[in-house]
Each structure stands twice: as C-alpha cells, then as structure tokens.
Length: 305
Image (cartoon, rainbow, N blue to C red; front, side):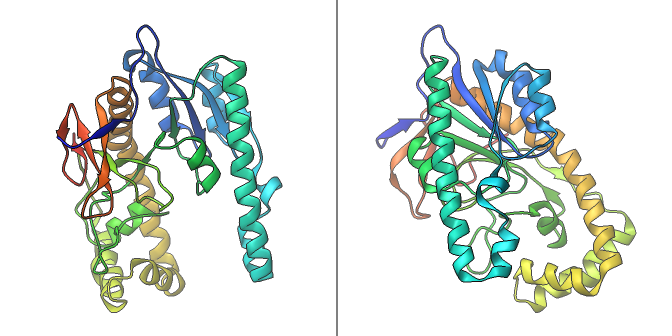
C-alpha cells in the first residue's frame, strides 16, 4: 500500500476535539451533536460568521458560540462588485484578513480551554475558506455537499458544485440525488471525497417534471451544458416556473438532509474519529489524493453508504 496519512490518530481515553462552523439553520450541526458521544468526537465550540438559526442549536446543546460578523469586517460582495475592480480587490483582501483573524481566535480559544483542534466541521457555512485557515488547519476540515461530486461535465469539471447544487442536479434531469462528505480544499467543492450517501429519489410532480423537460433541459442543451447560464436565463424569462421549480427543489433538499446529509456526515465524523480514514501522500490522475478506509483504497466517489 502507498504511504498514507491518517486524518486523525485516536488518543486513548479522549474524544476527537472538534469545532463546527455554521451560517444557516443548524440542522447538520444538530445531527452531528446528537451523534458525538457514540462517535467519540466532541464539538467544543461553534463559529458563526452571521446571526443565524444555528445559534439556537448551539445554545440548546450548551456549546460555546464564537461570533465575528463577516459583513461588518469585510463588507458585502455585491457592493464591491457594483463599485468596481478596486473595491473587489479590497474586499478579497479583507476576506483573507478575516480568515486569518478567525484562525488566531480559534487557536487562542483552544489553548485557553486546553484542547487541540483535531477537526473542523462545516455545517452549512456559506463563506469560501481562504488561505490562512487552510494553513492553520491543514486536512482538518470536512464539509457535506448536497450533490454527487464525482459527476463531471463536458469540460471534465465537477458538475454540481457551489450554490444551488440540488437545483442544478434536478434541472439536469437527475432522477436521484446524493450528498458527499469531502475534505475542504482551496478549490470550492473540489476536495477528496470521503463518503457518498445513499441516493434519494426525485419525486417531481407532473407540472414540475414538465418544466424540467420542456424548459430547463432544452436551455441546458442550448448553452452546451453550462447549467449556471441556463438557470440564469430560465430565472429571467420564466419567473413563475422558476419559483415553482425552486420551491420543489427546496422541499426535496429538506428531505435530502434527513436521508443523505445527516447519515453521511455523522458516519464520516465517526470513522475519522476512530482513525479509519487516511489519504495518500501522492496525487492520482485526478490531481487528488486517494482516500483509504481501513487501509482499503476507496473509489473516486469515496466510500458508498
């Protein structure tokens, strides 16, 4: 077997010490908190970049909140775009400074509380991670993405990355959707895949299926597979249909969280805490490191549940 590195090496008599990041509802956070005792990991704090419902989850579970407003520190991306290139660059610089500040703040907190940060869980954290955080916590960040990341488009890029991944998959005609737990890397949704969830069937009602077959599918074909461009045009030209489709996708994603996100994320956390997950030192043909579970090399999509 090639030389590998464990994502975490268990320590006798202690759980894997973790911190979570959150920006949204906190459902993934709560799923991880519910399983932490049996999974032998402990979420010691939750970092928030904005006021959100997940704060209530942290309070319910008596987990220390750490809050720094990203908007107050960095400003708004939309305002920077409107103001021009100089403001865009200033905004990006502020984002780098913000992440450096977060890294220092978390390291200080862990030192004061006498624990090491073994793993960071991104539980609905809606900001792009910057260089300083990666350097502070190398190969120590896990995210669950609501799509199958092993699917690739005509340009050999991962097909369902970024925001609206469920919408992209369903408008592309997928009959099933998945969730993927992956290592966080500088490329958004581009890291090594640890676990691929079981699928959940897309049960679109007839009117929604008609929208997909007669509107979004032809647009995607017209834009040569560029889903983002197709959806942008779809939203502009077919607002009532767009609202109906996105409403269905939101409902589907709610069910996907229960059947895909939560089992995959909690299983990954448990496996990492048990020292079962390792990555190769060398990169493969996809410019990624191979993932090993119990010394067995996993397929490109990660371990299937």
